[in-house]
Length: 489
Ligand code: URP
Ligand code: ZN
Ligand code: ZN
Ligand code: ZN
Image (spheres, rainbow, N blue to C red):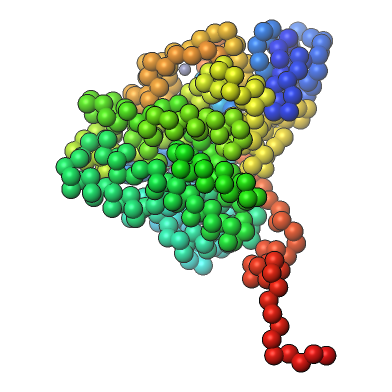
């Protein structure tokens, strides 16, 4: 803070435009973006960005830091996760608050504690795992007082996080009335439980059983069901971690019909295939266990195409890391392998290398899918997701000529494994600036624990006045009911 930085000579990329310009930063905020800004005095730190791209820091819409899950806790907390993120060019993320015994306020309190040593800005979504009048009241408090504008419903994880259709409907209705966005983990949890039992009965207990027990049709079914329930309630829907063609095509169809559905692919689904789950080495295979599963070869290519075309809109990671000891909880039964993979540090590099370097998206699209779209969807644009006068100075400088190699020996996550082990590519984030602080520069970190701020996300407006009051009236307005038994005047 207080630092003054001038980034000179680079190509400044926003989602709407790429231009040759300098960027001047003061007190954590972008003050000017235009060509040939004079250096001024000696107290300004000048950074030469010639030949490089100056872009908004990444915003990851989907992470799980310090989450208690499947009998353990994710190994990256808000500090190590933030170190990894900043080293990889991500300057903000939105994590999922898990309620404590269904209690939202207690869940938020516990996540505020977890985030006490945050080193970059963060926001919260909140999971809804139970339903009663108290939960409905707390949702309103979360939106109106605590800056949470999105709620996630898990249609899988039977016996723990899973919601019934009844709860999902109540939740969609409540989200709509609050101007909040409903998010779904779309897999049919009852069918997954059945599929898992079938694999165990066949004697298939290894990580490949994870993929075999919950095939793409179960993701497609739940995605279609959630989309239709959201249509019935007439409220927007955000589908997290779209992993299969089956789910993606349901989103494409709904969009074609005019429905407001947002699809989020994650890095693992965009670039990996499930052959890893068949690796005879349990330690390697178990790394790749996440839900919905990483799919057979072919799905990732289709998901990339959907990201190019706009059917899918923004890229998350679902960063949810466990080390090999934790993954080994399921060495005799794949159902006990903690679900989740890394990606928070790798996302910006992998998307650049696999989408921009290959010509599948432009540099402006890159900024859109890694940053701007997330800021817009969660209502914090243009403070976040842009390099404009008045925006927070969350900025990266990427050198397109330098290459990277990924792996557990060099990453900053606390996990001893990495699903992108040995992955090589082009494009290197050389500088990360977090609200005006130089936190990553040529391989050197300068992290300030506790400097990360909670970003409040305001609710959205209604479609038009009154629509939230009565869905029955809305439906009747589309097709008028008959007035029977009334005498003509
Ligand atoms: O395997 C996963 N995705 N773990 C994190 C929890 C979730 O479903 O997002
Ligand atoms: Zn999920
Ligand atoms: Zn997740
Ligand atoms: Zn690194």
